[in-house]
Image (cartoon, rainbow, N blue to C red):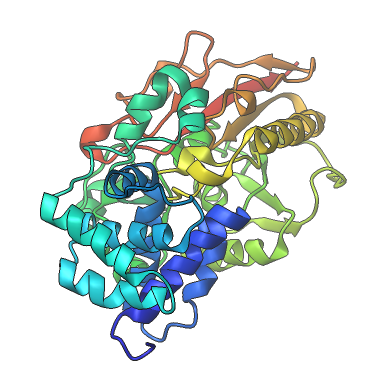
Length: 414
């Protein structure tokens, strides 16, 4: 069946979903299943099918169950193939006859007639998905009263966000790129344009970074103090957006991450943007700095459930065990980082997680005192909590494409 046009992309998408749902892999890692496809368009299609299947999984299963007399097991291959068939028709606009021609070969030697019958029944009925995805029950319970608004923000993949090296040029680049600016130094574009094809890429005028992800570095302010850049540690720096922000704001940056492989992307972007930082591959739990820092940005390792707009796999592979493990790690890293601050130095803690255990549940060491985030430091569409913490989630800013979910807190060394 390899000669059926489009078959290989569908087979790769099936393997990607299986890797996420059965083995708990990230969608990025599972995307290796598409690496052997020769055409970039086929690789993009496989990723889109897999991502949209995971985004709408609960609702796809509800449709399948409505058209079967006996419920298919969750791990049954016909269910997996039907999910892909339905999402191509209902989300990607593939005509039903093309869906059938490219997907049924995935069931070679299996119950093709069953899958064909279920799909045809739903197509004749004019089946439809709801206005926004239904969250898995366990996820909805964890997110409580915010679950519905978060789910509303998941209906579409996110737009493309760019952070400018020179915020003063915001209006110029918004016009040149055909985007909109939601705050100085930030441009938002419709998704789908290849990054390398955009004006300004080669000259390093910008880098890709979600608007919410750009806020922690902004909350450290400018690095220059009249005597040159103050020293800042970007802890867990890869993939590097915050390092670039801090360097462009005049800080003398040390970018530390445990993965030298991931730091290679940081080095590439520093070279492309003509910015500088001291890049170090080391484990923050054993590394010792040579001197104290004026500021530290701890973008801590986390479950990343706040990135569910672009990484819907987190809806299906993150459970209480992973949340608890991450919270323990975050507490240890915060305690170590606190000891590396100069007197009066600032520390910003951030996680791209929607789990309370990784945000409000993290207790700082006694050496840190709260440095509340003020409303005047934030865009007009965001407000801190009464205690000076900032929280964002995918349900915010719906008219402009939403935000990733973050919890951000700030302290000073006592």
